Length: 293
Length: 230
Ligand SMILES: Nc1ncnc2c1ncn2[C@@H]1O[C@H](COP(=O)(O)OP(=O)(O)OP(=O)(O)O)[C@@H](O)[C@H]1O
Ligand SMILES: [Mg+2]
Image (cartoon, rainbow over all chains, first blue to last red; front, side, top):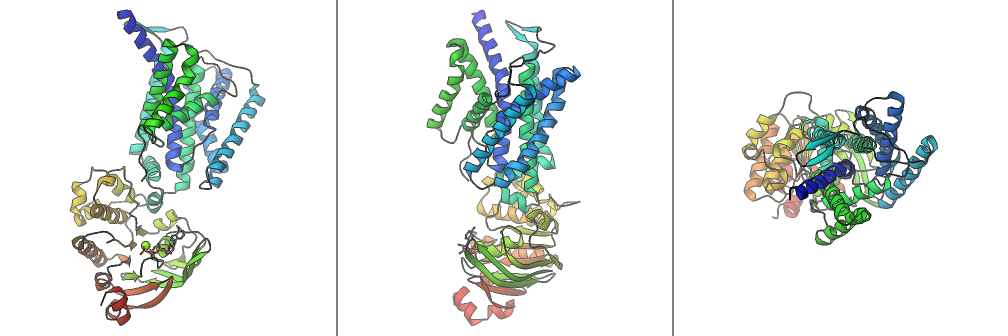
């Protein structure tokens, strides 16, 4: 009996850990969708850039890879700001088709650029804590998982405080609830768009660092599967809802790991989408979706 | 203080405003009346830079603000209470008011707003989306005042309110003017609006057809017939 509980909590912990990457991706996507009402289909490429930037900084500096978040987050924020300014602002409000083509273009540009610089071999890196296991009662956990979960929680708490307490954060929330209202309060909504897109990209960059540090392999094309799951999560949790992104990300992480544990690893990716379809049939606005205003 | 000169505005191929000119002097309440679809809200949103491709001039303290982004206009101490209120529904009353002060450099007007609308003080922690229509209108006015404007534009502040609330809201407008605020008021409650105004303009199918002191407009036969139901 104790053994079963031990195994189940171990699987739940894996779910929590893999949910972290999804939560960071989906939160960024929803932040951007909330303010700009666009979906950046190249969001997975920000994750991929995050892994390579971490890898590169690690090779040249030899720093503890977790410290490299200080590099990957700001670099991705800047990349996001530039992408918003050059690619998405000009097409804002011109229709979904333009967003899709801009995103597709960005996917190819980023993938090929990275392949050009670092080739398209699979890469991986090793955390200095890779061999450390922590005993928590009946379960054994890699120290890296615990750090990743803690780091993700810290990032989310900082984001929450930023959005709730700072003037800029409030301007972002205002613009996402009522763009015209925000303009009339004197908010420069174009600046808010740029900043929001940057923060979304920065969160994906953080996810990239955590992905690389946890020892998972990456190549220039690795962004697409996690990104598709990110899209599934924001639909599942409700477009624009940050709590929805967090709970949806956790749910997908858990479901995947329990499925892999019970049915086998090959079901892992399929089950997220089965869950998505079921939720959409029952509740088309997503679990936490806002009704149309 | 605010002068609109020969303003023309179109939506794609449909011209909505034709050569509209209108002035509001410091300290005045000026009412703009006109039937549904006359172009009143179009005029108002054009003042705030929310319509594309207008021609003409909009002078605020002798500076042409036509073509400036909305946030630049609001920073010049001109604020709007829009027709649809445009509140932040999932923020509290308090947060809505605080956002009203976004462009304000110092101090705040919270006490003043709570004194004007005591109900907002009781509802501070409630989400704006859950307020009644009347409360939402009070919040929209209060939020606009938080910016510390010198001149405000109100687009049908009494729309959808009970007669008692209409009276209260227009009474507040009068009081704000007595406190020194310059006001451009768009209203369908023509009698009550003209009673608290210095001057008025009539907009018909996108053209200014009549203007004069409020007293005069109140006794104008055509206005009596068209807007006062007499
Ligand atoms: N975004 C828009 N696109 C196209 N036409 C518009 C748009 N907004 C308003 N119009 C048209 O412009 C005209 C003037 O509209 P406007 O809202 O300015 O009138 P209004 O005087 O404010 O009316 P009401 O008293 O009903 O508020 C109307 O014929 C309306 O259909
Ligand atoms: Mg109108």
